[in-house]
Length: 88
Image 1 (cartoon, rainbow, N blue to C red):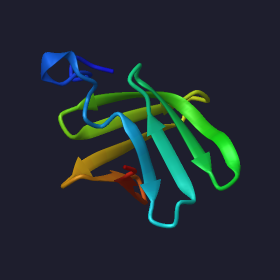
Image 2 (cartoon, rainbow, N blue to C red):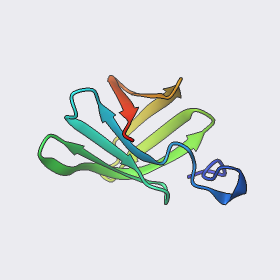
Image 3 (cartoon, rainbow, N blue to C red):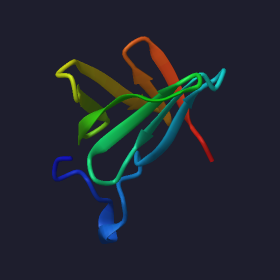
Image 4 (tube, rainbow, N blue to C red):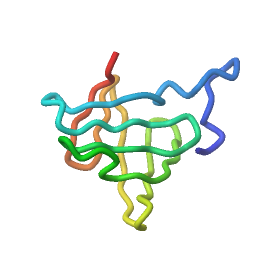
């Protein structure tokens, strides 16, 4: 991640954690080490790679070299064509 990787006081960035589509089919975990792991249906780790955060914008680079972007607005992650919500 970038220098935005921690919140004040050294706590993990607020975007770290599990994000899920409304139907639960896609589950994207943003890990505190700047990596992500995305499951699709029963396919665990369908996509893995790294991500960086700048403000509310996220840049993804899949381990195969594919790139994508996302933006968090009002607590919702808009990742390309997906809409993901935090899993409590």
